[in-house]
Length: 87
Image (cartoon, rainbow, N blue to C red):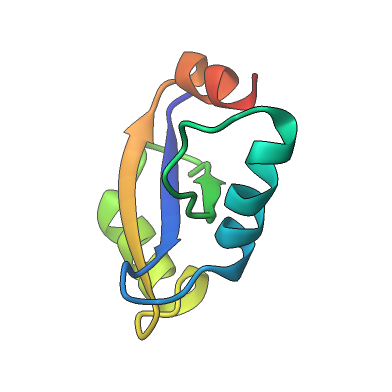
């Protein structure tokens, strides 16, 4: 069943302390070729009928993201893509 995915990320000009903490920890794990890390959220929405991108954008804008500090994207994925994202 297709799902609508909403990816929410802090705007580029907003500091990401969680991402900075991960980036700072990577050298201790032997990873030295990562320039920066940004942390976000992925929300999957299943509609009872066909996926409704306009409704999903409205949900994201009013409930899932803070438009002052966050950007979001909305797209439809197949069940296979949803499973791949969880691996």
